[in-house]
Image 1: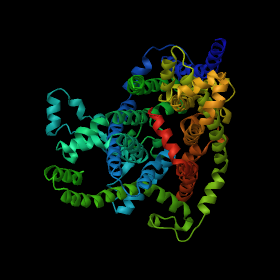
Image 2: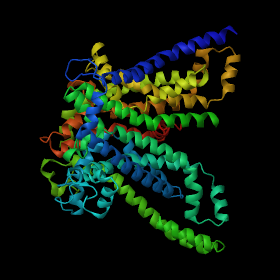
Image 3: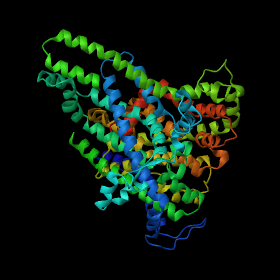
Image 4: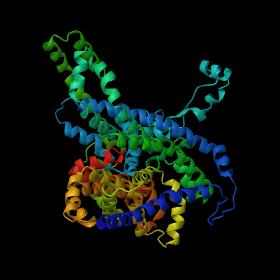
Length: 320
Length: 294
């Protein structure tokens, strides 16, 4: 009886350094960043004079940060939806006893092994107006400007829907701050290239876990192939979809490397993101308090996505 | 999806006429392959461009020839890129290899304890640790710079390695824990009855079974350290820059020819691509573990 107790002490002693490291470097430094975000620190030397929530007020009032938030929302929606659509389509096609399945799987997934920097450099070359796809497809570089396009699609205030929005007091939605920057879609293409194979792999693993008998049973009941997919397969894949949305969503909230290599801020901040703003504020302009405030907003966004997911995951683990 | 839909409807109405159903289903096969090949093009084209542009010599690098195969093999772009990037390549190796090795050792130990030596609150603690792998690192970056300065590690490779190891704790612990949980408790119990203690159980039972787990974690950590940009760009001095930072720098420099930039990118991508090609199965497992479904 003495031995297990001694081993228990050893086990706790050996796991302790990692726990302490995470406590300090994750939670401690987050707290420290939170503290910095409430100070006046805006030059090379730290200045911890408290300014309360002023930094948050000022970033939310800044046009650039507002555009960053717009870009984050637009990018996240497009990136997540397109990746999910491509991922589930490819997984379904590959799940039909395809010749060369292993080859296709590898091809769809290999971009995951590459850094966002390399992806950004290549796609910059592929989507530059004067080269790449414009050249291959004979597209006019003046009208197909990809990530250099300053256009922001928004509802015109003079159009019918714009008038309606104005009449019901939502006229602000016609502001380009609620529009879709065309340049952002180029970043979406590159990000989808990198991540959609991962979604495919998640769905394929999910599909392989669904017993054929379930599909057969639905078919016997007279369900069409589409009906089987919609009523049987899709609901069973819901956990996979949730996982994919969370993983892709949190990546898009943090996106930094890809835009650095491809289009750091873009025309009129069309490809600017909170992460870009955070880094430039802190390490280019030495406005560390402002950078910290942006970082806190990023953390809150990611946490609202991840914390429920972690709790959900843990419940699943304990019930199964 | 239209093809599938049509088949589906036909299937439902003529469910008793199996041969006809089979025939129509056959028609959808070419369509499936066509879509898969189209997707293959989408994924392959960037690599094609990387390769052919990298293999082209100075005179061939004009926009007119962008999509065409190079006339004969020229490796001048690679030698140029290598001259510029070889110190950074070495830095990447010096960062990613120790980071991967140290991370996997630490992860294995943590995973063993959290799987086989659970204590009160260890599950909650595990969830709290996992949160660390999702946070935006921007949220810890400013104090991290200050800490590195205080420890005299500013700009150094050692500092960056330590950071990769520390922020690798959540994922490596997760992968090993899930791996060890699957090892039957009876095996551990039997060793315990034979008088094995904490280290005996680890050394005799778990470690010998851990090789695949180590491969998964080594690959995962090597790849993430190799591909990291944010930490390296913020925390290393120019002479310690890894490839990602150097390549990004090269590509934003308009004085550097495109073929050299492409060759440089390929050099940066090659090691992790090679690992993927050779050890894809293990790479996949790491990926799936990263979504917590290990």
